[in-house]
Structure formats: C-alpha cells, structure tokens
Image (cartoon, rainbow, N blue to C red):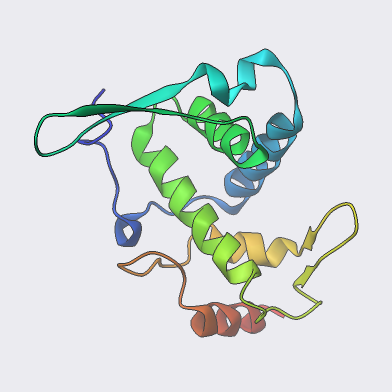
Length: 148
C-alpha cells in the first residue's frame, strides 16, 4: 500500500460514526500512555525523498504525541484513508480545543485530565474540515449549540 497514493486531503476527510471516533480516540490515548515496547516510536522511522533524489531518514522520538499517532496507525493499519481522515479530525479538534472558544460546558482543563463533552466528539466525528485543515471554529460552536 502506497501511503502517498492513499493520502486524503483535509477537506476530503471521511466522516466517522461518533462512537467509532470516540472509541478510537480513547484507545489511542490509553495506548499512548503505555510504555510497552510495541508502542515505542523510536523503533520506527520515515524515509523522505526530496526533488533531487536525496533520501533523508526521520527518526521519531518517544513522546506522548508520537505514541498516539502510531497507536492510530496501528488501529487503521489496513485502511490508510481512514487513518488520514482520523488524524485530520484529531488535529482539527486539537486546534479547536486550544482556541479558547469552547466554554467550560464543552471543554474543561483538569489537573490530571481534560474533560471533553461527548457532543464535541460527536460533532468532530463528521463536521466538515476546511481545505487548509481545521474546523471553522465559529461554525463548529454554532453546530454544538444546536444540539443543546
């Protein structure tokens, strides 16, 4: 399977069933917290070839973010379009969560864990992603408030 041929642009990201999106998110978080060797990003690398043909190896570090990404890779190992779509949705959600637009009703930062309302995850599972990536924040919040 060629990862480039299977790449999904942000605006073409597949929609997810809300339960699948939430379950995948929870599973990836739990696996990324594990220090099991199977999730060790330092055991993986990526080869990039530039326009001149020079190949560079990128070595991953062992951090929560890389463990999360590789947990999602493993989860969708047989479905690259779904992997790319999930990651586009995760990056869009992460950006929204750090925008400051969501009130405590929808998102609350805790000392040990953040709390995200299930409705936020349900909307993120299928909400349109912009061409350059990310959700239209104001439209997302409007959609959240419709379901109250």
